[in-house]
Amino acid sequence: MPAREVLGQLADWLGEVAVRTAATVDWAGIGHGDEVVALRGPATGLRPLLRGLTGVPSVLTHGDLASGHNVLVDGGGRPAVLDWETAREHGLPLLDLLPLLCSSLARNRVGGDLHREAAHVVDLATGRAPDSAWLLEQVARYARRLAIPRDEVGPLALLAWGHQASMRMVRDELLTAAGLPVTPWTSLGELVLDAWWQGVGRNWPQLSATAS
Image 1 (tube, one colour):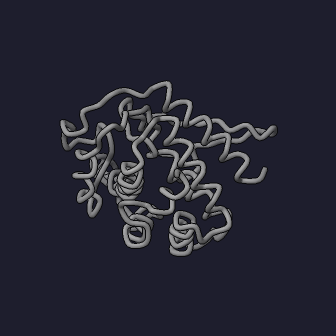
Image 2 (cartoon, helix red, strand yellow):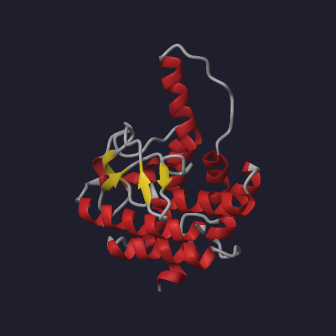
């Protein structure tokens, strides 16, 4: 199946899940735990963005969709999402949708080298990739369904990548706590977070143009 066809179904489904589970949250009162989003290392500097959100609902999030390993597609092209052990009842919008779409599209186009994939993710977000218009429309439609203020989408995107950049460190913590060895490695999320901050920024102007 063409990747975009399956990803389009997932985008529609994630939007429906978000709408059905949306709840009002006082983000300024959120603590420092992982109950909403996991932030480790350089990503901890994004926490003020979380506490500064206004007019953004919380939604049910899976938390581990970016790799695509927790999505199965049957012979008819219908996707199913597995492994909900990292789910959060009051998570951040875009936390699942954005990394899943971006990393899947990048892997489909330039897969095999994480640095090339990370660069392609930024190209997607800034309108320089073949799938850019499609990605921007998916994100803009998701934001419209949840009535997310336009100026909050950029911070949500950074927080979504901050979560992805932190997942390796979260896994390392769990391995250490279990007495298991930790092997050094770098995740796509870690590479994307830095590249996204430099190339897309907090305001994500290309998305604002799409949402106009």
